[in-house]
Length: 465
Image (cartoon, rainbow, N blue to C red; front, side):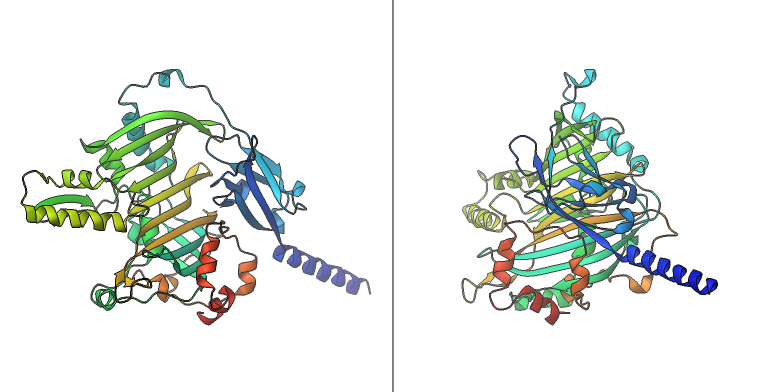
């Protein structure tokens, strides 16, 4: 009887432990400024002890799902320019919607930076690039991430496709070739495709194949691919123009005589001083935020776009000396350039955030807007239009222990030529209820309206599995 009692207790303990292991908590919240309650976008909300976190959306909202085993850990919220907010998870588990108020953090300028000389921005970036191998992982690690891709038609700005997935990204570190990166698609869901490709676009894919945006978005990370430059030379009407096919522009800022980079201000992140640099070189401009202590790069904003006259100048075209026929050609090209640029400003943009875990900076969030393929216009019958692709990747968890990670095997690896439009996985509705996704913003509610005029997204996800 005694043995039976002990066995019963043991079984109950096992069942209880298993239930605890499977139980998840969901924390919904919004990040606001302490003064004025203004939403704080792109704040990192995470559990540092577990290498887990999410990013608040454009209106400061977030949802964090975490296992019950993490319930005794602390929640940490950090953002450039604000004091870091930390609280025990046990104190917020019962909150319906947690409101987190961040206070601005003002740090005194280092004496050497009070009167920065004209080359200070260049010197700061140069030091940051020297320390890449020290600040970023050089060993194999794995990222669990949420991926979202939206396709928008260029003629009426209507959304025509939505794809989302949960992926594992296995990387061998900053010293390794990006071609070694492996991606495993664990879960996937996608809407109907409301846009029809043109015959010419289909022929292009048959000849040249497709590229997978899931790999392409990682190659947009300028820090990750800095040491793996591939230069190409294009010929535009007799004007040879060298460019970097893998966006090796961090080094170009320091090398190009036409580039400029300057220190414009000093802000803070997690109690440490951060340099704010602005850069510009032909057809490219943006911001870089660099930690003043270890010179780790926290954040990058990059925009590809320029005034059309600047492009002509870069190509060495003098519109005062060319023929009237060529002038007309460039006038038509100017109209095309303005039409394909989003809001008439840029043809591509990248936002990259890095989060420090165990002394190294890991990718936290990357957002990429680029030109998509050609489609049949829904506005002008018989006409062709283009599309914009909006891709975002939010890292939920960083795994550095090889023994604990479920490594991506070669047979599980997503083919680099398999377009995200062709990926199919069984739609797991229960999984998506408990997984950390980047919350949709009010602006992105337009995506839902555009895609669901015939049937709900749930119906589309099930149909396209």
